[in-house]
Each structure stands twice: as structure tokens, then as C-alpha cells.
Length: 117
Image (cartoon, rainbow, N blue to C red; front, side, top):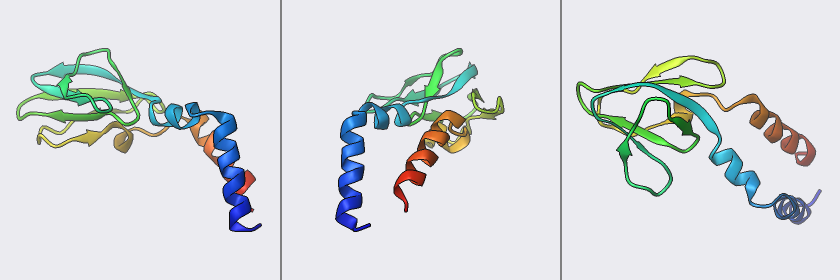
């Protein structure tokens, strides 16, 4: 298949599917906040950092950071593993520590299988 045909098929798929496909993948829930002690912050999209709260849902694309002697614990939805946000003040992406749910992986695999021939 020519590259131009492949491009046309991909473009058509995106148009037919709507922009929700990309948005859903980038803003899918990945984790919940188990506990927060001290100054642990989250940045969602283009918004400024704000204090993280226990019980909050974290999405793919969210960034977290924690000050010294602060502690934030999150639980990944896909595998129930817990993770402590390092207190180094650096931004950490939720998607870097929590796996993407299987339903999204299936969507991506299905798309790749159809259009990678």
C-alpha cells in the first residue's frame, strides 16, 4: 500500500472516530490517590499545579510533584499496585508509573493490526 493511501486511511479513521479517540487515550483514569501528607501537587493539562487530595482520580497526562518530607501515595487502577511520589520536587507523570488499562491497549492493537499491512 502506498504511503499516501495509508495516510488517507488514517486521516479518514481519525475524522470518522472524532477527536474523542485521542482525548480518551490521553485523559483516561489511571490511578487514585490513597493518601497525601504535606505538599504534594498535581498538574492537569495546562492548569497550574494545585494541592493533591486523597480520593482523587489521576488521569493519563497528569503530573505530580512532592516537596521534601511530604508524601503522596497513589494506587494504579490497572493492577492495584501502589506507588509513593518521590519527594524530590520533580514532576512525575502518572502514565510513567501506572500501566494503561487493557481496554485502551486493545484499541491501539486493533488499529495497528488493521493498518500496518
